Structure formats: C-alpha cells, structure tokens
Image (cartoon, rainbow, N blue to C red; front, side, top):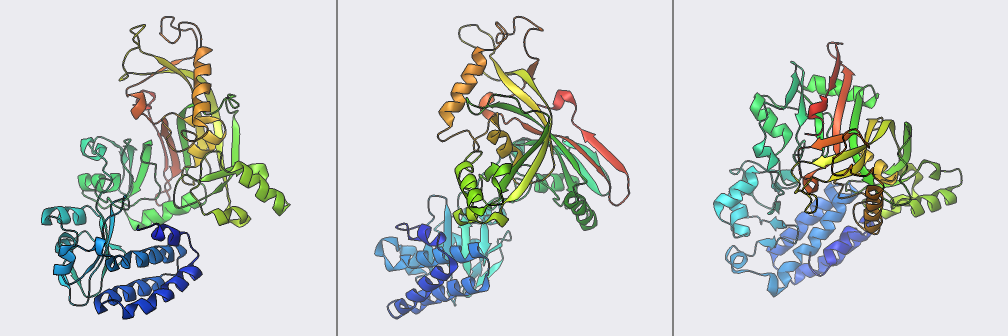
Length: 469
C-alpha cells in the first residue's frame, strides 16, 4: 500500500517473496522488539499457509509492517499504545493491525483503539463481518484478542440497500422440509462477501424463516430469479452431487444488446462452447473452442490473441500458457427473438413525449457447466452483451463500437415502432418496471431436478408477468 511495494510483492512468486522476507530479518537489529514480534507473526502466516495467494498477501503485509519505520506513518495513538503496529487503511478501506505480546482486549475495543474509531463504529464493523482475527472472520465484538494477533479490518464494507427493502417472506417461491426456493431480488448477494455477512439472501431469509440455510449454488448480485437454499447438511451434500452430475436443469433468460458492429447476428439455437480461464476475480477470460489445438504453440497464440474478448484480466497471466488451467464451458441456446423494450421508470422522450423503446434480443439459455460469470462472458463474446453489463464488453476499447452498434440497430427498427404508435408492427414489446440505468437483464427463469432424498420431481418456473419485474 505504500510506494507500490505491496502491489509488486503480491505479483511476485512465493519463492521470491520468501527471499524478501529473509532480507528483512537484519532490520530487526534496528527496530524495537515489538515490531520484530510483528515480523515473526508475518513469517508464521507465510509458512503456515501453502496457498500461493496467502503467500502473496503475507509478503504484502510484510511490506506494510515496515511502515512504522517511517515517521509520517506514526500517530500519537500508536505511540501511546506502545507502538502497536498499524497500517492505515488504503484506497480500498482495508487496514492491517498487529497486536503485541502484552495486548489483552476485546475485538471491538482493539479495532477502536488502533484505528482511532468510536467504539460503536468498531462494534458495528465486527457485527457486520468486516473484521478478521488471524484470517478468521469475527462477529463477536467481545471476543478476546490477546498476545500476538493479526487483524484485518474492512473499514468501508460494501452495502446492499435492497436487502433492507425486501420482504423476505414474500419472495419464497416454494418451501419443503429439506429446501426452500426463492425469487432472488436484484442487488443482494447470495451469501457473505469478504466485508459483509449481514446484507445477504442467506442471512436475511434464514432470519425470516428461523432456520440456518446453506448454499448449494449461487447467482450474481445483479441477477434475479429462482435460487435454492438447503435446510440441512444432508440435503446440501445430496444436491451438490446432483449439480456435479449435471442433473439439475437451470434455464436463464437474458435481454441483450449488440456488443460490436461486426457481430449482430442473433445466436442460433444450439450449443455455445468456449474455453474459460477461471479466476478468483472477475472478469474471466474466454477463448474460442477451436483454440485448444493439438499444437501447443498454436493453442497459446490463439488463446492469447482472443482471450481479451468477453473480459479483460482477472486471472494470472502465467496461466495463459497452461492448457490444463483452461476449462470447457458449455451452454445451450433454446431461442432468440427480437423485442422492443420500454423501461417504465425512464423519463419520456423530450421530442415525442413518449417512452423510448430499445431494440434488444431476448435469449433463452440453459446452463450446462456452471462457472462464475459464464453466461455473461459467453454472450458478450458472441457479440451480444447483457443489458446493464458493466464488466464484459461494456467498457474499454469496445465501448464506442458497442454504442455505434446499438445506434445502428435502433435506426433500422420498424418506423414508429419506437414510439409505440403501431401495435403489432415490428418486434414484440416488453415493459420492464425499472430504470434502464439500474437494470441488469439476466434472470434465472427455470429450475428443474429430482429431489435426492424423496425422489420427488420438482419443476419451478417464473410466471411470464414476473419475469422482468
């Protein structure tokens, strides 16, 4: 976080990070024993965690620990508390704290003291799930923190207001003794995120039903539609086996806009097959299915030249050359039809005093493999990005091209169809009760499976009138 050193360390292989750790050791003769204790904690974290990402984070933390050597990073609070090591929160609002051997206080008071926060604010961060002690989430504000402990505090947790405005009992679509299916609202995560474990479907619905829910699958925050929660570990395990065997049918509907001038043909019914490089961060990379050839050199060349479509970055660059890291992702297009979409909460056109209609494609797809952002990336790669998409084909070099394609498509629409003056002329019309700038055009439309415990067959489908609500 300081001088770019942490960022460089996070992209460094673990062996080099280990060398840097050892190179810091001589500094212990020049710093206090308390700071040296912090270095020992960092070294313990690095050696205890075999995962590469943890090694990178530990190396970055080690660079942060050098911060107390710089006078500009010292505060009166740190001096008064005996030089406890504290790195101020960076642009993302993440602060790193380390206590020393004689520290003994509750988690809430520890965060309040080292970050100079009011105690109610520190307690709120703990209860919200934004505080970690030794890499474990802490929600109990009275949990004792003693000795040498490493704390990570997300001081700016991302908020999801839709969680508070939703009547969670009203979104229940079907409930049995083993599971519950809901119509997930837009703008709420399915389960706990890194800095927020409260404003989630899992937490709010579980509280409303009075049961502890488990997540066998998920939908993106922006996506709405049918979502299943398990009520018991037995059903969770059995349903996960159904998912692994691809015996759960999941059908989606998407409202799409052209993402390039060169790709305006509607997807034909049939399979969409690509190679995907999964990653912990979005966006994911895609390559055409034909890219993985027998010749490794040709494969690498095809993947590198084409993987930027449908998403940039998001995965380790060295994995581009590893053919085994790529996964085949498959979905089936059932149908694609042209529609004219009007958003009821948009302002009327100043010239016609009528609502504007947007020419789009309504595509029905079945998810065969279930990778993160798979449908979003595949549709954008195919030339039709989902309306409201902010990651794939929505920004970057292709943004201007996409806007030009949308304008060209609108110009070729049937005369007067945009004003809605001629019913029955042009594509079918859809009314979406939302503002276009707040809308994301992907909905989990259908869910079908045989219950692994009772052998009963279930087929859930959203009613047409609630599909785009």
